[in-house]
Amino acid sequence: MTVNILIVDDHLDSRFSTQARVTKMFSDLDSSELIIKTAATIDELYAQIKEFSFHVILLDRDLGKDSEGKMIDGVEHIENILEL
Image (tube, rainbow, N blue to C red; front, side):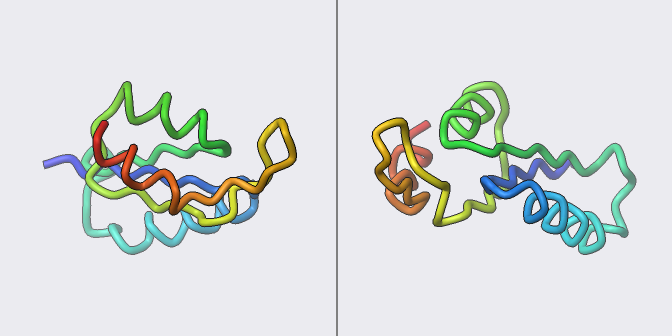
């Protein structure tokens, strides 16, 4: 069985460190059994979940600001994510 994980964080360093930790947590799996994708924005998140099916999504709460300067709260998108 392949495990598909999506890491969503607007900070590059956080995405990389989370990916390293997740890879270490699943070190008992063959590399072909673990697929980790990343997204830096809420738009990238939606594009990823429309294309792939994920077992786990690690979603940052603070995803920066939208084009109007409003803070993007990842928690506010959970319901939409679950629907997709």
